[in-house]
Length: 162
Length: 146
Image (tube, rainbow over all chains, first blue to last red; front, side, top):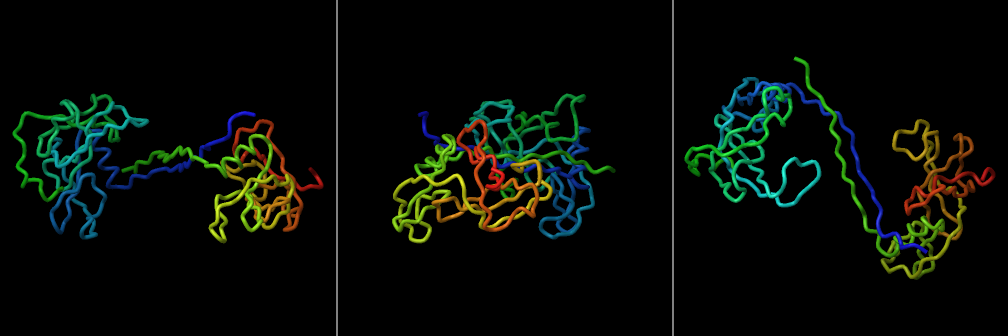
């Protein structure tokens, strides 16, 4: 008699078609042009990136489009040491929240271009874009962010975004 | 402006450890045997559980049950979908196997809903190859046509 059966595979799979909607479509088309587009809340003046078409705090439409910088400040980060499928980078690597200049909410991205243990809060970084011919309406148009030669941002400048 | 859309697949390929009781059930399926778990009060649970759902006591032994049983409840699927176990219309049914006191959810290949009823006797049809999966039972068929 062969070995007892000790486990079974019980996959869960959901097949969606994701429809981006107006705000996300504008944002993704911006990425295809090498631009990062947000939207401003008409009540608070805060700029949200990526935009969702409405203000999360006031519920009103965010109709004013604002281009923000592809430079920003690391507000917080984590070092990933666990490999997983479908990842293009090898651990250990750093995922960070980056407060882009001109934005009021951090943006989630990879950090490359320096040893993982040198990433720190307040570090100044800039987007590394895909080559022009590969720019497309996808987050993959931004490969990752890498450090730039600027002094670290003061804690107070991003404290409210942690 | 045309709105963008794209396929998005969310998939979790779980592997589940079975433990001693469900392990015996799935090992039985691979070996073309159907088994249940007997509780201290003498009830036989199929599919087996590790504890008596009424008292919480551990089940006492794994016991063989029949390959035939009776439909206790059913629902007809007129238009099977991609992941359904059969490509033709079928019934999902609760089946109480001979020797069991609880019912197993499975599939009855009855051809048409008029052949289905609670109380219908059905018999297991095994797949040509068994691997230790509930799908080792391809389906159940009415006993008259088994």
